[in-house]
Length: 166
Image 1 (cartoon, helix red, strand yellow):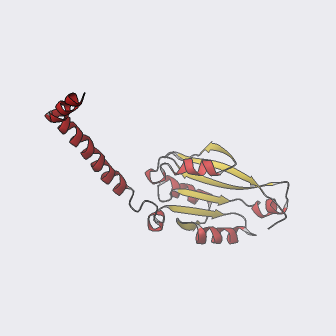
Image 2 (image 1 turned 45 degrees about the vertical axis):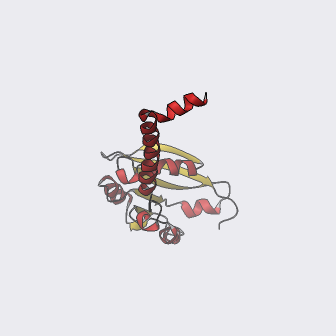
Image 3 (image 1 turned 135 degrees about the vertical axis):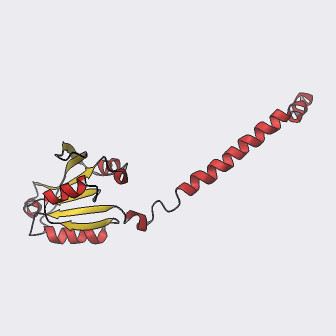
């Protein structure tokens, strides 16, 4: 048996195969790990553009300001839903968050769900893979095809409001 192992290790094909296997591991480890360098840095997230449409003038502006301040992505207020959809279809925005007109009223009633709508353009390469993450975070979502020709799709999501109006 020992004689067989010595003969095995003396063959050039064994040495070449072993060296090749080790080199592949090293090369792939270096290439793979450097590809993720800076993938989660805040500067790169700021490149994602999110529009916020505020239809609720009571609490909507305050919520929009808080979202703009705390989200790790670039945000901008958009005047109307139609303008936001146009920007989304032109790929100037990757996502639109819409705060509906009755949002503050739904927060005041504990038995009513507070609904915030978000829309993404699934044909946008910058948002590729992001919608799956959003879907995992939401409790109750359903899709609705948008009227845009570039593949915009809306997701209507709701969360039950707990407590009084705050």
